Image (cartoon, rainbow, N blue to C red; front, side, top):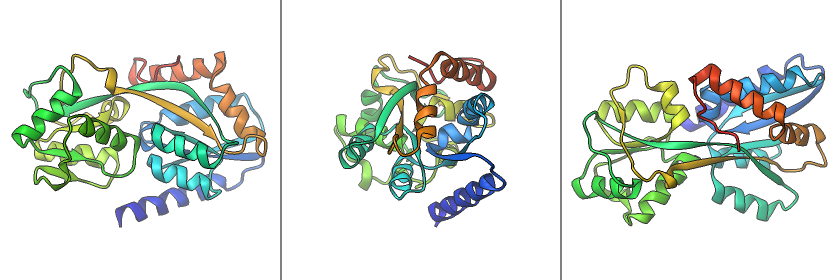
Length: 261
């Protein structure tokens, strides 16, 4: 029910954004973290300032929903971080073109004073061993996909454990539940920095963070059919696009959370 409401709100926002548009419109289905933080909007604003006659409309969805939205013909560009789903999409739509203009990182969060670990796999293994409460988005997002990847490496399936809580919701709601329960959760750094004020959670120290790297990919399903979408995708990889990404990071976080290559 909550997911249906979120989709309806996204559709209403999209229709509102389209009202009065006088130029070519490109619809971007993007991960909720990028949308909720305001990061992608700042980048889009920079693009539109230099490209008269093109309007970019953003819809915030989890990775699985964003890909389905685009395949249904409702979006022209996908900005997500679920590699496996994107690989499957390319198999189905071989004309699709993907690039990687920026990357972030995941962080493991938990109650203050909780010990970290040498790796996220070791930390998840400790959670399972001691029955520490863990809150999962369980929503088909890229964050959820990374969480499942780590559990598979433990290896442990927590789905039947009573300490494992599923929200079926976005990162903001999941952080609130983890905060209330004093639980462990996985979050993208940008989402955590945006929502952390007022929360009692802390970043848990991880020595080897290689598994927590989080590359984003921008995919255009049919670049030949909508050159404006392909142009935005290409612009992100240019000096101007990279400068816009750097500026958005500085404005929102005062640091480079979404790193350019």
